[in-house]
Length: 176
Length: 257
Image 1 (cartoon, rainbow over the protein chains, first blue to last red):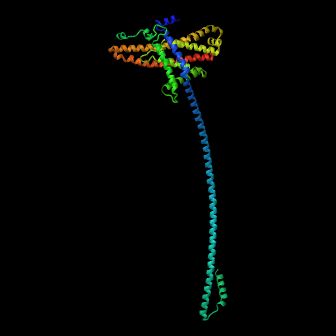
Image 2: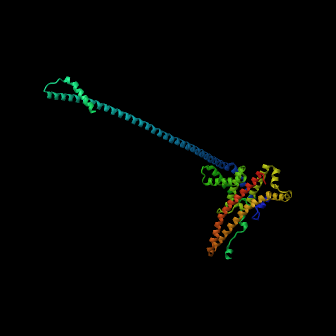
Image 3: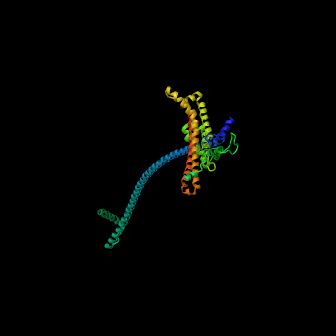
């Protein structure tokens, strides 16, 4: 065997393999395979696997986050729609209430105005009555004074009062 | 004619048979080719060891190179050809790819400028390793009789044709495959090596003849282009060797013809 290898190592044909090259390349390759399989390759394989898992995990987490965000968005949109609906309802309700209050206030104000007018009219009537009464007294006094001046004598006031009152009542009735 | 006469093209034996550095005359003669094979082993190990040690989430530098290679072999070779079951062969195929690639790249590395794979002494043992591997895998997965039956008897072929086809299948699967693997890689790298030597010798001859300096850019430009092309061929041949290995092992695992 050794003689064959030696013969090969001394081969003059440049194409034929030389024994030294065969032995060293086989040795190199097997040593490489052994250390790759035992020492160098497992960390790379683990690293690639871990990274794949991390990327897969990150993608899944991102997908979950996206779904959650989508759900939150849908929820927020629903809440917004509900809030819009509620605000519209509240505005309508407030408008109706305001209209009721306004109508009530107007009605009350009108009542108060009518009452005030009535009171004013009553006060005016009372004043007018008082003035008429005073005027009657003054007229009676003037008439009596005039009559005394005409007759040149003192007249008894109490005896003429019913006559004056009757006259004034008649004149008042005729003036109406 | 005078220019051609100045070309100092070395004899084929001189560019392929390297003198031993030590252990000369013995079966373990250590020369330039064995040095590149040993260096390719060391460089492959250092690349993988450094990449495995860095463990950065975002790979850079060596880690990036190794990871890109491993990723390429995983997706373009193992998963495409062997399927997920073939992932157990990933370290072997990665080692094979990087070992051949780095050996090939020594073709263009200054000072070395000799790919170890341009020698049958390197490619033949690699091919025989693959040959032994796919036969052992086939026997382990399918059993001895079943594996050899599936390997040499094509299904759905009339009995009369089997007389012709079975010897051909035996020849193609068990004899041609390892030699085709070895000779394809050896031939391509040797041809590339000789091409580079040819244009380097031509450039040198042009340079030596001062009158021919105007012609110097042509062979030198060709040498530069071919150097780039040989880098591409180095990667391509490493890929072809690895993918064929995956195909052979994958066939043995699957049991299909």
